[in-house]
Image 1 (cartoon, rainbow, N blue to C red):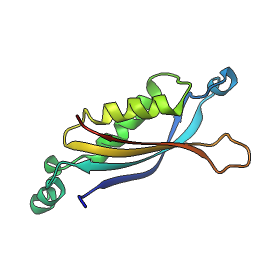
Image 2 (cartoon, rainbow, N blue to C red):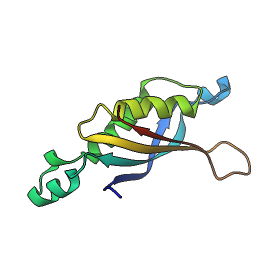
Image 3 (cartoon, rainbow, N blue to C red):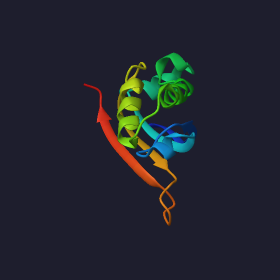
Length: 120
């Protein structure tokens, strides 16, 4: 198994929802992402104690927030795909698993979309 960098339960406000009344106000969604860095990146970063050798998780969190704030969307699936595409623009990411939770379905803790992508 290769190394991973995890961002767990990053809370972000965005305009999202199938119905107009959902998109009329910001909603909190929660992102969790498991980032697969390039092989050897974490070991290289640890050996040199240097962020330049690994994925900057702060930069990844900023990218997630920027994508979520960029425009309203109807579907979590759209937000997930656009976020994954943006994250792959950051250096050193070769794969990711991204989950977004939304809190609107009565009787459920959340509804979620989870995608798994590899950089092409």
